Amino acid sequence: MKVGLVLEGGALRTIFSTGVFDAMLEKDLMADYVVGVSAGIAYGVSYVSRQPRRNLEILTRFVNDRRYMGLKNLVDRHNRSYFGLEFAYGTIPNELVPFDYKTFDAFPGHVEAGVTNLETGEAEYQEVTSQDKHFRLLQATCAMPLMFPIFHLNGKPYLDGGVADAVPYRRALEQGCDRVVVILTKPRSFVRKPEKLLPLIQRRYRAYPNFCRTMEERPERDNSARAELFRLEQKGQALVLAPNSLHGVGRIEHNVDKLRMLWAEGYQQGMERLEEIRAFMGR
Image (cartoon, rainbow, N blue to C red; front, side, top):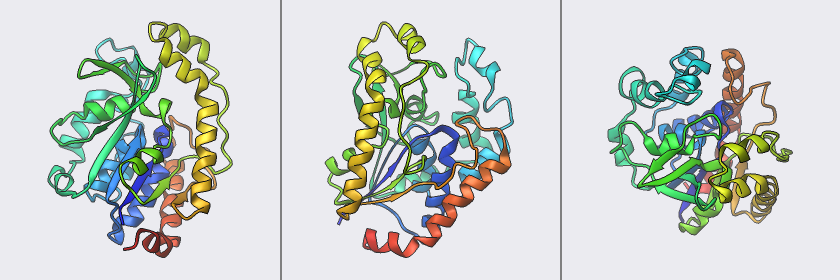
């Protein structure tokens, strides 16, 4: 039986997800395939490299460091992102909180990140590898509209993978997974509403009408996909973990105590449901 781990994005709220898979790592519960979008997969590579609490350390150490995130990064013409890209994707993993490339490479399964193609407006999935020490693919999947520059991979323009496919469980099933463990970053009751900044997005990305259409249709698509996911859960094909509360954590959160609380909820939920997860994964 092939089991996939599916990771929703959610910027810093994804700290909940790291709590869950930190609990899984403590008991050596490894999926056969991992796919995610945005911060989901950017944090999820630490699960693949078997480095529990690595993401918690990064956020608690650097969330208030201007090199990590802040408006100065956004107006820097060499950066053009709220996050300091070189610091977050180069200095931290290669110097300050080293990423275990060797263990990542030893993972016997497949790891993919979803990105949104601006020209087509469609989701695409690419393999995450250790060959790029600056994680260009992870930067692209995290590239929130208006908050990041456009990333070009193999000559094509991309932004945040969560725009076209917020929870890529269908991709996991297409890749041959019989069951999927899905970690959401929003409560089960979440309903996506129309994007308030849609007019601004439509102006900023007017050269990409298909992407603008995808942004406009996002609420209906995401809400329908979540409903389908919960039906799969009832059939026993998916196991879903989601926060009961966000503890006031915003997508761009500076309060370390709040981040610790949301991580702790993920960790506690992971530990409490550990045997259920183990049985579901057939481990």
